[in-house]
Length: 224
Length: 354
Image 1 (cartoon, one colour):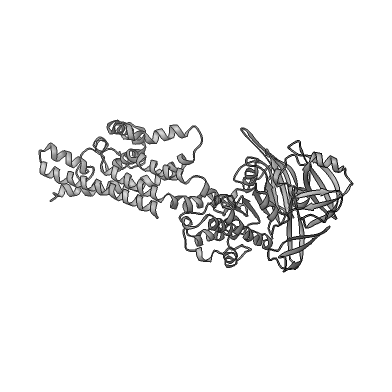
Image 2 (cartoon, helix red, strand yellow):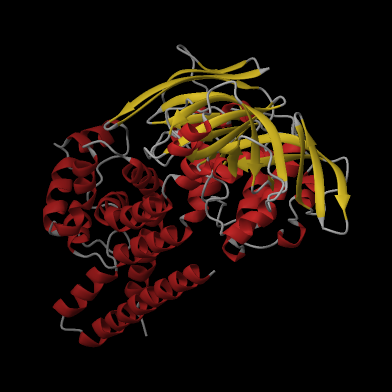
């Protein structure tokens, strides 16, 4: 049903989404924690920066990332100096772009979950000898489990679904940066509607299943 | 052995400024209206609120000008108004949370406290499947198992209805009698204070307006804030006799004896007696032709004006015990109740409170 290049694109997409989601959980959790507990006026600007990818066209984001990570950009100079080479048009570049692009989809559910928990259980933990770090892992994280589930699923699904920023940063290199959404675009360009249908329908089913899982998990989380 | 607490803290519209020297054992009640700063003071003691000041608990300094021991390093137990059990852990794991982190220093045994608070059947339940009273019992056990050297309780009965409260108070009394650590108990309910406290701090607008042993302080009539309908004396007594025919018990106290409703307390047991000022009336001579059983000779010590201009509060001495009586200013004048005058007090109702 799928051609080898389709399968390569699917594999690459899943790899990209997995790596991105793991990195997002690592980066997004402390950001969400800080945002949820911040009282200073910095909270507004910081929250706005994190939410920017929600409203910016992917081309704008991609354009600036391209400049930053290119041979004349500060990030590009640093990665060349560090011996990593240039990030644009590589898998690493895609990961960086995806992490930034999907950041709000991970930070916001986590921030909401942390805010819903509030200070009370953490104060109780402190009176029971739990250090702040201990309380975070033994109280805040387990209580925020539904938030983590939502964040993981949304981060993964949103990375699978991106297109514009992938094209800007990754281009269209088979096995390296050609993900499913780009592959579909190629099939359509080549008027190969049958192949496009295969992948597109797959995406529709995938998205539906992801959102269904999210709904079911959340409603079960509320019951238990 | 004492708890020395001095705290100052200012928020918009509220300032806390107290300097207390509390006993190093027994129950100290922080008593006052909502908003008087009781909870804030308790939170300062726990390090949950950062007031400037000093806190030393039985010789150990937890906070002073140069040092602020964070909450999780203070060996305290805190029982919140809203139990605050961890929703993701069952009762057993809630109990173990603080116990594990205090590395087995607990002075109370896990099994003993589970037994004392009747938690055995609840151990594998999640907090959401517990009633308010059960949650509060778990919260108290959880705090005690963390090996506290100071137990802070913030209106632990506030979320319970009257029936639950009556069911719960005996648990608290048993705890009080079995623990050797100081307990600071925040409350705005005079009946809880009368029943549980040995020492009382009366707070108003962020300040401690009176503090001292319970009986002495409750019998004072010079307090800037009054207890209103709840003004009354509390003192210790011993059950001396139980009359099976009339279902009455005779209790002896320093100054005389009283007949009270027999509630099953065995002879020889120490009890607390509470007599509200509104239940005390005064006569210049002894009257035996009335329904009131408890008639005692007393001496007028002092009186003070009440909030309503028609009323006065009279402090009376019966033997070594101080009582309060409320009567109208007109009656006080008619009876000529000057300090030093010998009178008879007629006590309409006596409550045994634990």
